[in-house]
Image (cartoon, rainbow, N blue to C red; front, top):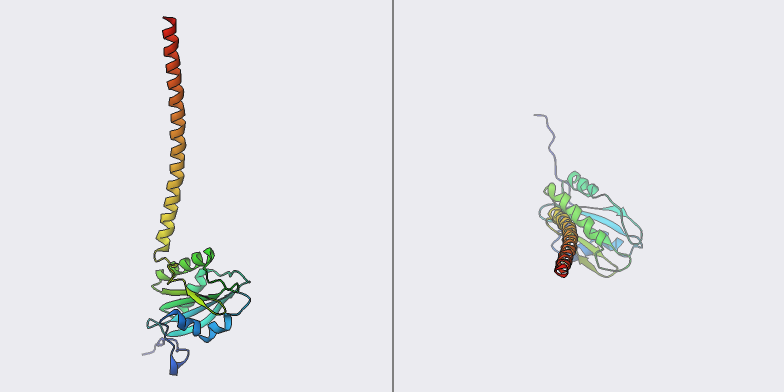
Length: 195
């Protein structure tokens, strides 16, 4: 038989594999300690197997002091190429704010949605500062059905728009009825005065 056996990627440290069970372990990783004080935002990718053992860690993007730019499909590609079952994203905030920005939330949920199409789980997106960290998952910022949420939001916005149009039509009809009513009353008064 002549075929090649595809092997799983090696653990980063075979004698001491790192298992991620909470965001504190993520924060303590050497690679995270290297970016937490950076003056530019750095986005790190942590690829895991289905037992949450770290398989690979790499920098995906370096931005400026308050934002990053990366196409979410690069994260999907990285997960597929590395045969990762789970992914954790980590980025630093040079401002030392632990609040996820609206673009952080949108980006994270888009990535989560794309990864789920390939049966890859986004475990978390951790934001780190010089002395602290926060988990977007534990703060409820990662939405499981983000695409459905976007569709629901679009439907909601469409309903609001339709509601506004209907209110305008109702107001126009009310104005017409008022004019007709006034005209009828005026006609009735005129007829009574003629008698």
